[in-house]
Length: 246
Image (cartoon, rainbow, N blue to C red; front, side, top):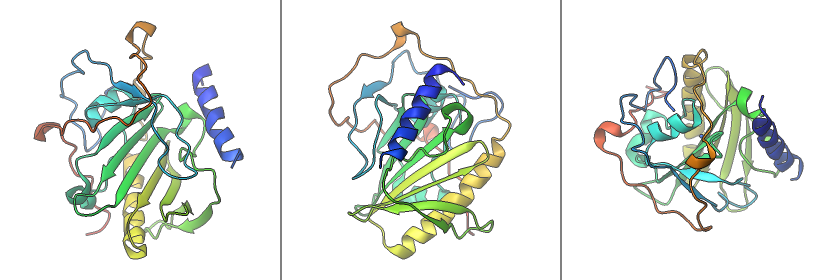
């Protein structure tokens, strides 16, 4: 592990103790490898606010116009959404990476005030399987999937749920807010089941990552909430992940 990855892993560990380039062999469902390159435009760097109370988000965060651009930047496939949630939550409101190590994709429901944030990271690169940034109390529970996967779940004072788990080479973290208990359990089961298939599909992919040179680094922006990216063209939009349930 390189020095930067070690430092980033230490950052995440500190958060816990105190309280996101095309890839080599396959293209993840939800991306289009033939998408044109980033047109020479560097993603925006922003100092983003926390996802919610007790949720720590390290800087810098880089925003991208679409998922393929994010994947080219971080060098690994990223989890988008289970297919049965696309009708309500696609397109993403914001597509970020955390220092090009963790993908952070944020969704706002088209029907109500519910929100979802999905994070993905490669464990061998970041050195930890907890990418939630949450430093409150956790409980271990079953995800309710066929494999009886164990997940760690927390709930904030506002009612937002935070979930973290790992599968294969990947760490996942999801926050869900504005849904009732039954909807949450259904979402949880689908997220974990689809993530299991995702991690199996990409178990042998080769990391394709080239650090940006100093000249390529985007200029630092004021700490403000960034505008949502333009909606991707239909051919650029992520395709549905296979649903966990029929």
